[in-house]
Length: 350
Image (cartoon, rainbow, N blue to C red; front, side, top):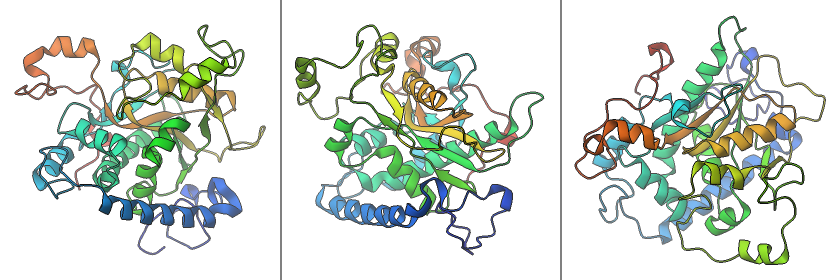
């Protein structure tokens, strides 16, 4: 398309994208790409209608009848305007090899936590726009990091494949939508992602961990009692792993994901292609570690990950002290949010 908008499907229209950045015809969905585009448009229309029925308030300051007031929107933009390397603060990430993770901002700064919680747990799909813009900035920087590679590595200049981390079936049924997928589709429709970007929803969550890959606590298919416990109603806002420590999260997630679709075994990705995992929040890194394990099992190499926000590790909060914790009332904004990236890998505002 002449306006540079990229819908991730490459339907044969010459959009000016260089051939080396152009995804395979039809994207990862082949002949069903047009049906998926239609489904995305229907989903956006339904969510927009439902947003009219939900009481609207600014999640940052509580102002009524305003989705996100101008002041809170500016705070969110400033807090997520300079993506940074966040892998050092996530102790649950794999280290051999290291998985580079780029976060748009600190979860506890600029009202980022309030916006994401409202989007995920209160049906506030009207906040998709600013959250998708923040995620797009993280994806752009993560792609630049992955394309340069390490010392002596050949640069990767192929298509960018984004693999969203899946939600559990219960979470998706409770919400009615997948937040990460919603953000990525919005960013793609608005042309916020790099040229040649393709959405690759290859992962899904198992009903129970696969035998031989599960943790010792979950060695195989659960008992009927465990299945009933899995369907026990929860209080809204109680995530499956919220409040769990690093080891507990890792035990619960081990073997929980699988590839539901993607390249057939033995087929190769486009030369120079970059595969990035995408999630909303980085806490311990256990979720991204399990997603990479599932893709590795399917023969897909992962080159990095991007998230909207990263939760500061307890060690980082102790080093800053309570008066520097931006999550506390009256706390000063921290001067460091993670490992700084070189200037040429940071996005300029705009």
